[in-house]
Image (tube, rainbow, N blue to C red; front, top):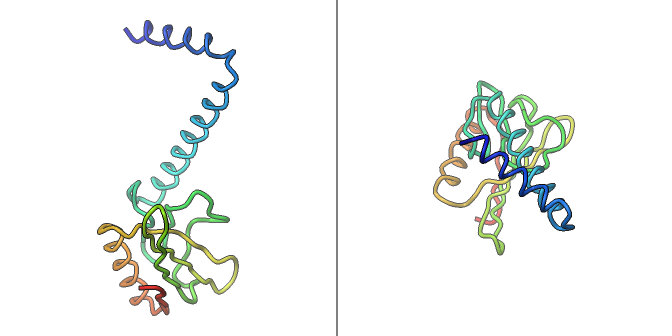
Length: 141
């Protein structure tokens, strides 16, 4: 059954390989699959959930959100100076952007959705930052 399906898929792919649009579509699909795999493996390393924007383990904040996060995705609380939380509205809906100002190195920025789950995650993040005595500045809400 599976071998028949795979041979059917192979003949379909070979017949479509001559189209100019198919390689582009296949490349985009492959890129998205690799991106999901990369994100999944990085999240498995930290022990968090796939759809969460971040995960806190011990004294380290692991960032799961964002397609482009320059540098490492783990930020120890000892390296944080201040955290800015901005409420942003747009065509795609409302979001919270969290910018982490570090003592040394690049600032980190990630996005949390403004639905109920996102607001709950934001409160948990604010509680953890308060426990580690990190200043939080809120803008726009």
